[in-house]
Image 1 (cartoon, rainbow, N blue to C red):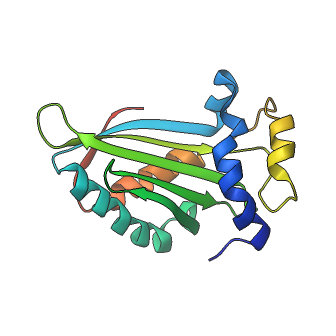
Image 2 (image 1 turned 180 degrees about the vertical axis):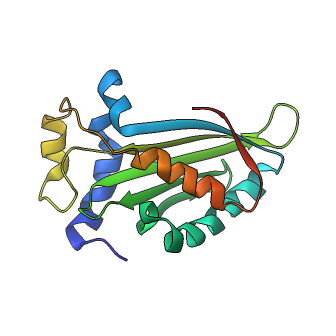
Length: 161
């Protein structure tokens, strides 16, 4: 399922600015961070994560509309734009790195990028003005990371949240 034309135009700018993440206490209302650990290598984890996107698209209501925005195979990182039904933009960023002993670790974050949905004309301007406005994500960001992690075909454990 694709997002509307205006959302596809404004999403990269909204994700880069990310005004909803500017204030520390307020951003906690609509973001979720985790550290993952796996026995698999970082490249294997990245490939598993990309395959898991196809799985969650059909099985999880939190992944119906998404677009892989960036894949950096040298840094083993990915940035994914996800859209709610009303086309609020949530951003998922995951970066794998070699683990301390073996395997790999990842920093995973999912956050809501602004108060207004991306179909609103100039939403990134209004979201910048209203960056201080608190709102809840209804735990979508946590559930989104949970669904993606569970769909991966390599075992991944959560170290901290």
